[in-house]
Length: 245
Image (tube, rainbow, N blue to C red; front, top):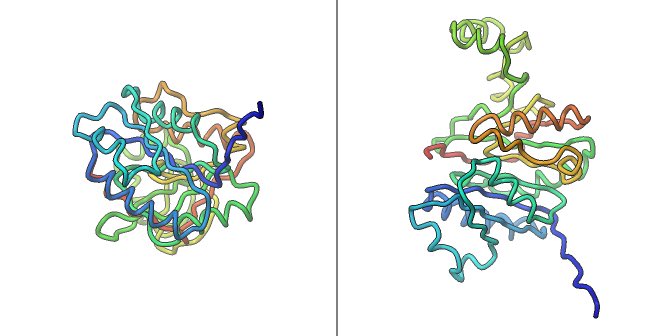
């Protein structure tokens, strides 16, 4: 008897959902269009962390037959993503929040850039709010004692205005670089929409599940960078992030 050959994908989209049914519907509608537009083999995995808003009623509906659903205990954002990644087969992992929509060309543009830049382990597209205002989604440094002190004393606001382009100790991000829209290497990107190369994941493993929510993607990217990979902000691709969850 012949063994069943595993069917690989170009991209695995992982969405961890918790009590955001309406946003999730909107996200999947946007994603389905972009998958068709990309021409790539894309699998979509939704991990539902024990939602109580009726999200489970979407499971099994014919219109979502292209989605693989995983019903899970709510052990946090990182744990949910780890479940999805373990079930995925794509060369690239695209982590996406359920309260997002993809702008036209997003999947193909990110895929093409990753294909052409083999040293890049993580890629973050441009992220905008629902009203079109650019969200800070790329960071020049990792958070630490200095950045915490600057934020608590409000000195960071003064320094941002005095030296908007200078990368000084404790400065986490540059608004001017976001507005200018330049592709550049950064320390880490926002977890609401981020691409990860499968080989980088294999090297460092998944999220540290001790982080229930917030900073788990920062820790993950820190480990990915330590392993020698580059993290890049890629504003040529765009994602709308409503961030109202």
